[in-house]
Image (cartoon, rainbow over the protein chains, first blue to last red):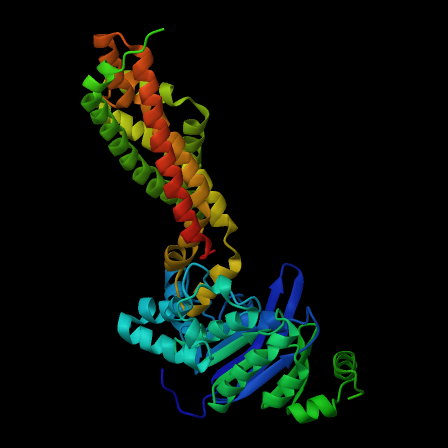
Length: 259
Length: 217
């Protein structure tokens, strides 16, 4: 799946999603170039999490198209097992980090990281262990390799979850409010890990409530409300001089500054 | 009242044979009902109604009728047309009976694993079945251990019911010894103690396994 480098890593065209009568995504266009970081902010219920989950098909979109590195993710033409095979393959190229970590409690920290490479890529036990230890090292948790998730703090759990997602060598990382469930003093350690990834030019899409972090780390920022992108711009512009009244209002509520 | 335990000592090797038979049957039935229970639970949760409704009906049937009746039905009832060896009837009857109870437990614990676990696994690229196998079922199993243990302890005591269709387990062999020695009181006391010891052993094993599983929940 190697494409010319000018192909966007992720591209969404006119994505629409309905839950029953409620249209939660009303035609979203989005483009992430490789190595770039986009943050999406917006109030609860704005559709930003649904958008992120649509990208790896945890939510199935009703209209539009989603491309990962030039390959179409949503495939209305594929049914049943054919689609299952297709989406499993696509998902191996995307790392997803959840608000509530969702670590596998029956596996040790190291096993959490190595399970997917071992079972899905057939990596042998020794190489998987090396890979796992290297990734745990990167998130600063090599000393916790043999413990079970129940004995980790929230921040540590989320760092392991990031290592787990990285273990499949994804082309893009999707962060769904990765720090929203954490105690304030634990947010920073997770943000640090994400910053390191940014420095290594990982392509990332970040849905977040951390305005300062989004501004600091992103190449591009989007404000969503009511299932549409209200405004998008460079983070400096969006956070300091928003053009839209709704963006202004939202930022004022969250930052306490007039924008 | 006079007690004479010397016949018990004389027939102790016979009783030990019974203990061996009981434990062996118990092991086979435990494996069958635990593995089968998981399969039944998965089928009844994840397949279409055409498949899982008949299965649920069977579970319901096994859970609402007495074990002894089920054994009589399989052995004497079906025996009108086809004679199944008693040991096969015993193991299958007891196995299906407890498979139904264990399936009920697994259905509840599988449901109790959060949808976030399923999504996390799928997002890594695991398929539906692989997710069940690597992520959902192991967690459901850990959660089921306390109730499974209780069921298996009750099951081992229920093996005595198999004496009704002539299987030479502990109670059956003691009946034989009693019929020869006429010392029912001493034999029944001894057997009660033996059952108590088996129980104690199983409970110890269960709490050891539970402790080990606790960290992984």
